[in-house]
Image 1 (spheres, rainbow, N blue to C red):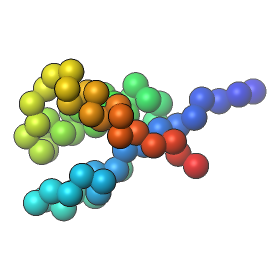
Image 2: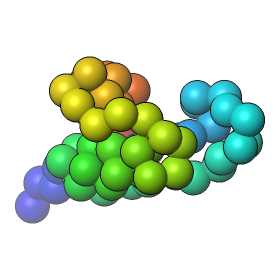
Image 3: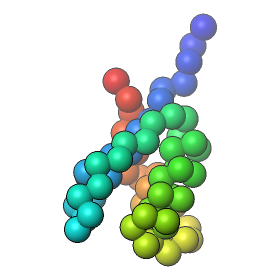
Image 4: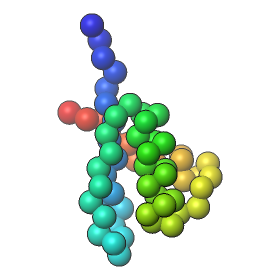
Length: 63
């Protein structure tokens, strides 16, 4: 049985004043959705395709 590669994004890759250390892992769609919501609610980013694209491009494969 083949499983899809889990993805993750780590707030520590994006230095901020809050020194956020949250890591989010899951399927690509799950991580993009959760990270987008986190970026908006916690870091004050503006919702939109630019934010989603930036998050999607910063995903890493979980090892």
